[in-house]
Length: 86
Image: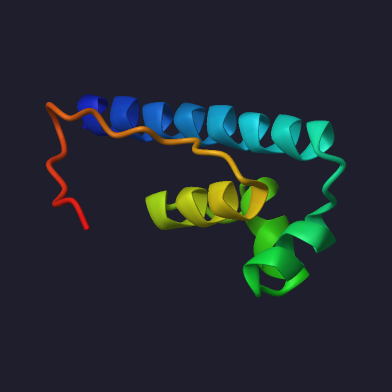
């Protein structure tokens, strides 16, 4: 059980770090949560829940938020993830 708690804590910390980076990028670009939701075609509540950590961020969420802001937050390691070139 102890290792499960460690993993859950690590996930929480990673979510906090990513949300912090997203908020910083939004501030740099003067983008509100409403603006971000509009750019993503989502409801404002969708963004609010994720940025308040009420709902954990998925990799897909982070990729979509990054695309809406014009940045890449997650850069997969070529050693860990092999993706086919389009």
